[in-house]
Image (cartoon, rainbow, N blue to C red; front, side, top):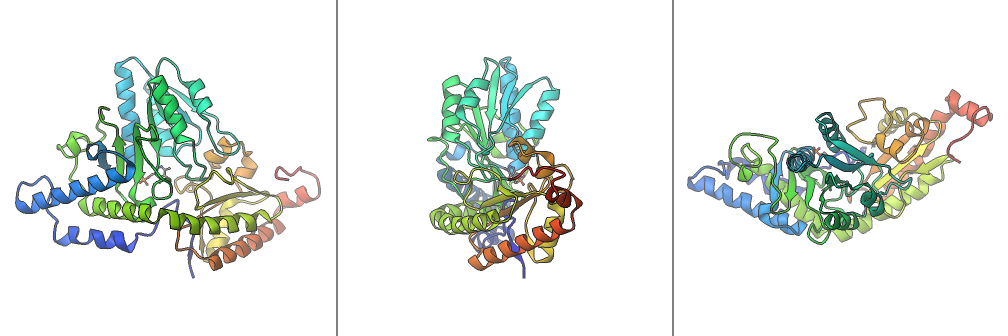
Length: 396
Ligand SMILES: *Cc1c(COP(=O)(O)O)cnc(C)c1O
Protein backbone atom coordinates (compact mmCIF):
# COMPACT_ATOMS: atom_id res chain seq x y z
CA UNK A 1 0.00 0.00 0.00
CA UNK A 2 1.22 3.47 -0.87
CA UNK A 3 -0.33 6.63 0.54
CA UNK A 4 0.83 9.62 -1.47
CA UNK A 5 0.86 12.78 0.63
CA UNK A 6 3.55 14.76 -1.19
CA UNK A 7 1.46 16.70 -3.69
CA UNK A 8 3.31 19.95 -3.04
CA UNK A 9 6.43 18.27 -4.47
CA UNK A 10 4.58 16.98 -7.49
CA UNK A 11 1.23 15.46 -8.41
CA UNK A 12 0.08 12.43 -10.35
CA UNK A 13 -1.09 13.40 -13.82
CA UNK A 14 -4.85 13.32 -14.23
CA UNK A 15 -6.42 11.02 -16.83
CA UNK A 16 -7.85 14.10 -18.51
CA UNK A 17 -4.39 15.60 -18.91
CA UNK A 18 -2.85 12.36 -20.21
CA UNK A 19 -5.63 11.80 -22.71
CA UNK A 20 -5.50 15.39 -23.89
CA UNK A 21 -1.76 15.03 -24.58
CA UNK A 22 -1.72 11.77 -26.52
CA UNK A 23 -2.80 13.05 -29.99
CA UNK A 24 0.02 15.62 -29.86
CA UNK A 25 2.64 12.89 -29.77
CA UNK A 26 1.61 10.81 -32.76
CA UNK A 27 -0.91 12.80 -34.81
CA UNK A 28 -0.51 16.55 -34.40
CA UNK A 29 3.24 16.35 -33.89
CA UNK A 30 4.38 19.03 -36.32
CA UNK A 31 6.33 22.08 -35.28
CA UNK A 32 3.94 25.02 -34.64
CA UNK A 33 6.40 27.26 -36.48
CA UNK A 34 6.17 25.19 -39.68
CA UNK A 35 4.13 26.71 -42.48
CA UNK A 36 2.54 23.51 -43.76
CA UNK A 37 -0.95 22.44 -42.83
CA UNK A 38 0.07 20.10 -40.03
CA UNK A 39 2.29 22.81 -38.54
CA UNK A 40 -0.51 25.34 -38.70
CA UNK A 41 -2.83 22.87 -37.03
CA UNK A 42 -0.31 22.53 -34.20
CA UNK A 43 -0.12 26.33 -34.03
CA UNK A 44 -3.90 26.58 -33.71
CA UNK A 45 -3.91 24.11 -30.84
CA UNK A 46 -1.08 26.01 -29.16
CA UNK A 47 -3.10 29.21 -29.44
CA UNK A 48 -6.17 27.49 -28.05
CA UNK A 49 -4.19 26.30 -25.01
CA UNK A 50 -2.87 29.82 -24.52
CA UNK A 51 -6.39 31.22 -24.69
CA UNK A 52 -7.65 28.68 -22.20
CA UNK A 53 -4.87 29.35 -19.67
CA UNK A 54 -5.31 33.11 -20.09
CA UNK A 55 -9.04 32.89 -19.45
CA UNK A 56 -8.53 30.86 -16.26
CA UNK A 57 -6.18 33.56 -14.92
CA UNK A 58 -8.25 36.54 -16.03
CA UNK A 59 -5.49 37.47 -18.51
CA UNK A 60 -5.21 38.11 -22.26
CA UNK A 61 -3.68 35.35 -24.47
CA UNK A 62 -0.83 37.63 -25.57
CA UNK A 63 0.15 38.00 -21.89
CA UNK A 64 0.90 34.26 -21.55
CA UNK A 65 4.37 32.79 -22.22
CA UNK A 66 4.92 29.04 -21.96
CA UNK A 67 8.11 28.06 -20.14
CA UNK A 68 9.81 24.86 -18.96
CA UNK A 69 8.23 25.20 -15.52
CA UNK A 70 7.79 27.33 -12.43
CA UNK A 71 11.51 27.85 -11.90
CA UNK A 72 12.07 29.29 -15.37
CA UNK A 73 9.00 31.53 -15.06
CA UNK A 74 10.28 32.88 -11.71
CA UNK A 75 13.73 33.50 -13.19
CA UNK A 76 12.36 35.28 -16.25
CA UNK A 77 9.95 37.47 -14.30
CA UNK A 78 12.59 38.63 -11.84
CA UNK A 79 15.38 39.12 -14.37
CA UNK A 80 13.01 41.05 -16.66
CA UNK A 81 11.99 43.44 -13.89
CA UNK A 82 15.61 43.83 -12.82
CA UNK A 83 16.78 44.70 -16.37
CA UNK A 84 13.95 47.20 -16.70
CA UNK A 85 14.78 48.69 -13.29
CA UNK A 86 18.47 48.91 -14.08
CA UNK A 87 17.75 50.99 -17.19
CA UNK A 88 15.91 53.47 -14.96
CA UNK A 89 18.58 53.43 -12.25
CA UNK A 90 16.30 51.46 -9.91
CA UNK A 91 18.17 48.54 -8.39
CA UNK A 92 16.20 47.58 -5.29
CA UNK A 93 13.97 44.49 -4.99
CA UNK A 94 11.60 43.54 -2.16
CA UNK A 95 10.84 39.90 -1.43
CA UNK A 96 10.48 37.62 1.60
CA UNK A 97 12.74 35.22 3.47
CA UNK A 98 10.46 32.24 2.75
CA UNK A 99 10.25 32.28 -1.04
CA UNK A 100 11.02 29.24 -3.18
CA UNK A 101 14.69 28.88 -4.10
CA UNK A 102 13.86 29.66 -7.75
CA UNK A 103 13.18 33.18 -6.47
CA UNK A 104 15.77 33.40 -3.67
CA UNK A 105 18.68 32.13 -5.76
CA UNK A 106 17.78 34.45 -8.65
CA UNK A 107 17.80 37.33 -6.17
CA UNK A 108 21.20 36.14 -4.84
CA UNK A 109 22.60 36.38 -8.34
CA UNK A 110 21.19 39.89 -8.81
CA UNK A 111 22.71 40.90 -5.49
CA UNK A 112 26.14 39.91 -6.82
CA UNK A 113 25.37 42.15 -9.80
CA UNK A 114 24.86 45.14 -7.52
CA UNK A 115 21.16 44.99 -6.73
CA UNK A 116 19.96 45.68 -3.21
CA UNK A 117 17.61 42.98 -1.96
CA UNK A 118 15.25 43.41 0.99
CA UNK A 119 13.89 40.10 2.29
CA UNK A 120 10.94 40.81 4.55
CA UNK A 121 10.62 38.92 7.83
CA UNK A 122 7.66 36.61 7.94
CA UNK A 123 5.33 36.71 10.93
CA UNK A 124 5.16 33.52 13.01
CA UNK A 125 1.82 32.70 11.34
CA UNK A 126 3.57 32.55 7.95
CA UNK A 127 1.98 35.68 6.50
CA UNK A 128 3.53 38.90 5.22
CA UNK A 129 1.45 42.07 5.52
CA UNK A 130 0.84 44.78 2.90
CA UNK A 131 2.07 47.27 5.52
CA UNK A 132 5.46 45.54 5.62
CA UNK A 133 5.64 45.73 1.84
CA UNK A 134 4.68 49.40 1.78
CA UNK A 135 7.30 50.25 4.39
CA UNK A 136 10.03 48.45 2.42
CA UNK A 137 9.37 50.12 -0.94
CA UNK A 138 11.78 52.95 -1.79
CA UNK A 139 12.31 55.36 -4.65
CA UNK A 140 14.77 52.82 -6.18
CA UNK A 141 12.48 49.78 -5.91
CA UNK A 142 11.88 48.11 -9.28
CA UNK A 143 10.12 44.91 -8.15
CA UNK A 144 8.18 43.27 -5.34
CA UNK A 145 8.12 39.47 -5.62
CA UNK A 146 6.06 37.59 -3.02
CA UNK A 147 4.63 34.11 -3.36
CA UNK A 148 0.88 33.50 -3.50
CA UNK A 149 0.99 30.49 -1.17
CA UNK A 150 4.01 28.98 0.53
CA UNK A 151 5.11 25.55 -0.70
CA UNK A 152 6.16 24.25 2.71
CA UNK A 153 3.67 25.64 5.22
CA UNK A 154 0.84 26.45 2.80
CA UNK A 155 0.11 29.93 4.12
CA UNK A 156 -1.76 32.23 1.73
CA UNK A 157 -0.50 35.78 1.34
CA UNK A 158 -2.72 38.87 0.96
CA UNK A 159 -1.79 39.09 -2.71
CA UNK A 160 -4.51 41.50 -3.80
CA UNK A 161 -3.66 43.98 -1.04
CA UNK A 162 0.09 43.68 -1.68
CA UNK A 163 -0.64 44.23 -5.38
CA UNK A 164 -2.63 47.35 -4.51
CA UNK A 165 0.31 48.76 -2.54
CA UNK A 166 2.62 48.11 -5.49
CA UNK A 167 0.22 49.79 -7.94
CA UNK A 168 -0.04 52.82 -5.65
CA UNK A 169 3.75 53.05 -5.48
CA UNK A 170 4.26 52.34 -9.19
CA UNK A 171 6.34 49.20 -8.58
CA UNK A 172 6.03 45.94 -10.54
CA UNK A 173 4.54 43.03 -8.59
CA UNK A 174 5.39 39.40 -9.37
CA UNK A 175 3.90 36.45 -7.53
CA UNK A 176 4.99 32.81 -7.61
CA UNK A 177 1.55 31.18 -7.72
CA UNK A 178 2.85 27.65 -8.33
CA UNK A 179 1.22 26.24 -5.19
CA UNK A 180 -1.94 28.30 -5.50
CA UNK A 181 -2.96 27.40 -9.05
CA UNK A 182 -5.78 24.90 -9.18
CA UNK A 183 -6.42 25.32 -5.43
CA UNK A 184 -7.25 29.02 -5.12
CA UNK A 185 -9.08 31.46 -7.32
CA UNK A 186 -6.65 33.61 -9.30
CA UNK A 187 -7.55 36.74 -11.25
CA UNK A 188 -4.51 38.77 -12.26
CA UNK A 189 -6.59 41.83 -13.15
CA UNK A 190 -8.61 41.93 -9.95
CA UNK A 191 -5.59 41.03 -7.79
CA UNK A 192 -3.29 43.76 -9.17
CA UNK A 193 -0.72 41.20 -10.35
CA UNK A 194 1.81 42.28 -13.00
CA UNK A 195 3.64 38.96 -13.38
CA UNK A 196 2.80 35.46 -12.20
CA UNK A 197 4.40 32.01 -12.40
CA UNK A 198 2.71 28.61 -12.72
CA UNK A 199 3.95 25.05 -13.03
CA UNK A 200 2.03 22.25 -14.75
CA UNK A 201 3.05 19.41 -12.47
CA UNK A 202 1.65 20.97 -9.28
CA UNK A 203 -1.97 20.63 -10.46
CA UNK A 204 -2.01 17.15 -12.04
CA UNK A 205 -0.46 18.28 -15.31
CA UNK A 206 2.88 17.20 -16.80
CA UNK A 207 6.34 18.10 -15.50
CA UNK A 208 8.69 20.40 -17.40
CA UNK A 209 6.11 22.95 -18.45
CA UNK A 210 4.93 26.19 -16.89
CA UNK A 211 3.51 29.62 -17.52
CA UNK A 212 4.75 33.15 -17.13
CA UNK A 213 1.99 35.72 -17.16
CA UNK A 214 3.30 39.22 -17.85
CA UNK A 215 0.91 42.14 -18.09
CA UNK A 216 0.77 43.80 -21.49
CA UNK A 217 3.52 46.37 -21.90
CA UNK A 218 6.05 44.77 -19.56
CA UNK A 219 9.18 44.11 -21.62
CA UNK A 220 10.40 40.58 -20.95
CA UNK A 221 14.08 39.66 -21.01
CA UNK A 222 15.03 36.34 -22.56
CA UNK A 223 16.42 33.56 -20.41
CA UNK A 224 16.68 31.20 -23.41
CA UNK A 225 17.95 32.73 -26.66
CA UNK A 226 17.26 31.26 -30.08
CA UNK A 227 14.28 31.23 -32.40
CA UNK A 228 11.29 33.53 -32.40
CA UNK A 229 8.88 31.29 -30.49
CA UNK A 230 6.62 32.86 -27.86
CA UNK A 231 6.86 36.26 -29.56
CA UNK A 232 10.64 36.03 -29.33
CA UNK A 233 10.54 36.01 -25.55
CA UNK A 234 11.23 32.31 -25.02
CA UNK A 235 13.14 30.45 -27.69
CA UNK A 236 12.86 26.73 -28.29
CA UNK A 237 10.27 24.59 -30.06
CA UNK A 238 7.13 24.63 -27.95
CA UNK A 239 6.51 21.46 -25.93
CA UNK A 240 3.04 21.13 -27.39
CA UNK A 241 1.98 17.85 -25.71
CA UNK A 242 2.95 19.22 -22.30
CA UNK A 243 1.35 22.60 -22.95
CA UNK A 244 -1.90 20.91 -24.00
CA UNK A 245 -1.74 18.63 -20.94
CA UNK A 246 -1.12 21.55 -18.61
CA UNK A 247 -4.01 23.56 -20.05
CA UNK A 248 -6.34 20.56 -19.70
CA UNK A 249 -5.20 19.95 -16.11
CA UNK A 250 -5.68 23.59 -15.15
CA UNK A 251 -9.13 23.67 -16.68
CA UNK A 252 -10.08 20.51 -14.79
CA UNK A 253 -8.64 21.75 -11.49
CA UNK A 254 -10.43 25.09 -11.78
CA UNK A 255 -13.74 23.47 -12.74
CA UNK A 256 -13.60 21.18 -9.69
CA UNK A 257 -11.93 23.63 -7.33
CA UNK A 258 -14.81 24.20 -4.93
CA UNK A 259 -15.65 20.53 -4.57
CA UNK A 260 -12.03 19.36 -4.28
CA UNK A 261 -11.21 22.09 -1.76
CA UNK A 262 -14.08 21.10 0.47
CA UNK A 263 -13.06 17.46 0.37
CA UNK A 264 -9.35 17.99 0.86
CA UNK A 265 -9.82 20.61 3.55
CA UNK A 266 -11.83 18.14 5.62
CA UNK A 267 -8.94 15.67 5.46
CA UNK A 268 -6.47 18.45 6.25
CA UNK A 269 -8.41 19.45 9.33
CA UNK A 270 -8.69 15.84 10.46
CA UNK A 271 -4.91 15.47 10.17
CA UNK A 272 -4.27 18.75 11.97
CA UNK A 273 -6.56 17.76 14.83
CA UNK A 274 -5.09 14.26 15.03
CA UNK A 275 -1.45 15.33 14.96
CA UNK A 276 -2.03 18.21 17.40
CA UNK A 277 -2.77 15.53 20.01
CA UNK A 278 0.89 14.44 19.91
CA UNK A 279 2.62 16.04 22.91
CA UNK A 280 5.09 18.82 22.15
CA UNK A 281 3.96 19.24 18.56
CA UNK A 282 3.12 22.47 16.78
CA UNK A 283 1.37 23.30 13.51
CA UNK A 284 3.49 25.51 11.27
CA UNK A 285 1.64 28.36 9.59
CA UNK A 286 -1.74 29.90 10.19
CA UNK A 287 -4.47 27.32 10.72
CA UNK A 288 -7.15 29.10 8.67
CA UNK A 289 -5.27 31.09 6.06
CA UNK A 290 -3.59 28.09 4.44
CA UNK A 291 -3.93 25.93 1.35
CA UNK A 292 -6.74 23.39 1.66
CA UNK A 293 -4.26 20.55 1.16
CA UNK A 294 -1.33 21.52 3.39
CA UNK A 295 -0.38 20.14 6.81
CA UNK A 296 3.01 20.99 8.33
CA UNK A 297 4.11 20.15 11.87
CA UNK A 298 7.20 20.30 14.03
CA UNK A 299 7.71 17.62 16.67
CA UNK A 300 10.18 18.34 19.42
CA UNK A 301 13.08 15.93 19.89
CA UNK A 302 12.70 14.39 16.42
CA UNK A 303 14.89 14.30 13.31
CA UNK A 304 12.69 14.93 10.27
CA UNK A 305 14.73 12.53 8.10
CA UNK A 306 14.29 9.64 10.54
CA UNK A 307 10.57 10.33 10.72
CA UNK A 308 10.28 10.34 6.92
CA UNK A 309 12.18 7.07 6.50
CA UNK A 310 10.06 5.26 9.08
CA UNK A 311 6.85 6.65 7.55
CA UNK A 312 8.09 5.53 4.14
CA UNK A 313 8.52 2.02 5.55
CA UNK A 314 4.84 2.21 6.49
CA UNK A 315 3.93 3.18 2.93
CA UNK A 316 3.50 6.91 3.50
CA UNK A 317 5.12 9.35 1.04
CA UNK A 318 5.61 12.62 2.88
CA UNK A 319 8.26 15.31 3.03
CA UNK A 320 10.14 17.28 5.65
CA UNK A 321 9.69 20.49 3.75
CA UNK A 322 10.62 21.39 0.25
CA UNK A 323 11.72 18.60 -2.09
CA UNK A 324 14.41 20.97 -3.27
CA UNK A 325 16.20 21.10 0.08
CA UNK A 326 15.59 17.58 1.32
CA UNK A 327 18.87 16.48 -0.23
CA UNK A 328 20.69 18.68 2.27
CA UNK A 329 20.75 18.52 6.04
CA UNK A 330 20.14 22.23 6.48
CA UNK A 331 16.90 23.01 8.30
CA UNK A 332 14.15 24.51 6.17
CA UNK A 333 14.69 28.22 5.45
CA UNK A 334 10.90 28.59 5.62
CA UNK A 335 10.67 27.30 9.18
CA UNK A 336 13.64 29.46 10.20
CA UNK A 337 11.90 32.45 8.56
CA UNK A 338 8.81 32.01 10.74
CA UNK A 339 11.06 31.91 13.78
CA UNK A 340 11.33 28.22 14.57
CA UNK A 341 14.68 27.55 16.26
CA UNK A 342 17.13 25.22 14.44
CA UNK A 343 16.57 22.22 16.70
CA UNK A 344 12.80 22.42 16.15
CA UNK A 345 13.01 23.16 12.44
CA UNK A 346 14.87 19.86 11.99
CA UNK A 347 11.87 17.90 13.23
CA UNK A 348 9.35 18.90 10.59
CA UNK A 349 6.83 16.97 8.55
CA UNK A 350 4.84 18.18 5.54
CA UNK A 351 1.81 16.28 4.34
CA UNK A 352 0.31 17.68 1.14
CA UNK A 353 -2.92 16.06 0.02
CA UNK A 354 -5.02 15.75 -3.09
CA UNK A 355 -8.65 14.90 -3.74
CA UNK A 356 -7.77 11.23 -4.15
CA UNK A 357 -6.73 10.85 -0.50
CA UNK A 358 -9.33 9.28 1.79
CA UNK A 359 -10.54 9.47 5.39
CA UNK A 360 -9.04 6.01 6.00
CA UNK A 361 -5.67 7.20 4.74
CA UNK A 362 -5.84 10.22 7.04
CA UNK A 363 -6.54 7.96 10.02
CA UNK A 364 -3.72 5.63 9.01
CA UNK A 365 -1.33 8.60 8.76
CA UNK A 366 -2.32 9.93 12.18
CA UNK A 367 -1.72 6.54 13.81
CA UNK A 368 1.55 5.99 11.98
CA UNK A 369 2.97 9.43 12.81
CA UNK A 370 1.89 9.11 16.46
CA UNK A 371 3.62 5.74 16.75
CA UNK A 372 6.79 6.74 14.93
CA UNK A 373 7.20 9.97 16.89
CA UNK A 374 6.80 8.05 20.17
CA UNK A 375 9.32 5.44 19.02
CA UNK A 376 11.93 7.98 17.90
CA UNK A 377 11.58 9.85 21.18
CA UNK A 378 11.99 6.62 23.13
CA UNK A 379 15.46 6.11 21.63
CA UNK A 380 16.53 9.78 21.63
CA UNK A 381 19.07 11.07 24.18
CA UNK A 382 17.81 14.63 23.52
CA UNK A 383 14.28 13.59 24.43
CA UNK A 384 15.54 11.94 27.65
CA UNK A 385 17.30 15.09 28.78
CA UNK A 386 14.15 17.11 27.97
CA UNK A 387 12.05 14.77 30.03
CA UNK A 388 14.51 14.83 32.89
CA UNK A 389 14.34 18.60 32.88
CA UNK A 390 18.03 19.02 31.98
CA UNK A 391 16.91 20.95 28.92
CA UNK A 392 13.79 23.05 28.39
CA UNK A 393 11.09 22.16 25.91
CA UNK A 394 10.77 24.70 23.12
CA UNK A 395 7.30 23.47 22.13
CA UNK A 396 4.94 23.52 25.10
C1 LIG B 1 7.53 23.54 -7.36
C2 LIG B 1 7.69 25.00 -7.17
C3 LIG B 1 8.46 25.77 -8.05
C4 LIG B 1 9.25 25.16 -9.17
O1 LIG B 1 8.46 24.72 -10.22
P1 LIG B 1 9.12 23.72 -11.30
O2 LIG B 1 8.07 23.58 -12.35
O3 LIG B 1 9.37 22.43 -10.57
O4 LIG B 1 10.36 24.37 -11.80
C5 LIG B 1 8.50 27.13 -7.84
N1 LIG B 1 7.84 27.71 -6.82
C6 LIG B 1 7.09 27.01 -5.96
C7 LIG B 1 6.35 27.71 -4.88
C8 LIG B 1 6.99 25.63 -6.10
O5 LIG B 1 6.25 24.94 -5.23
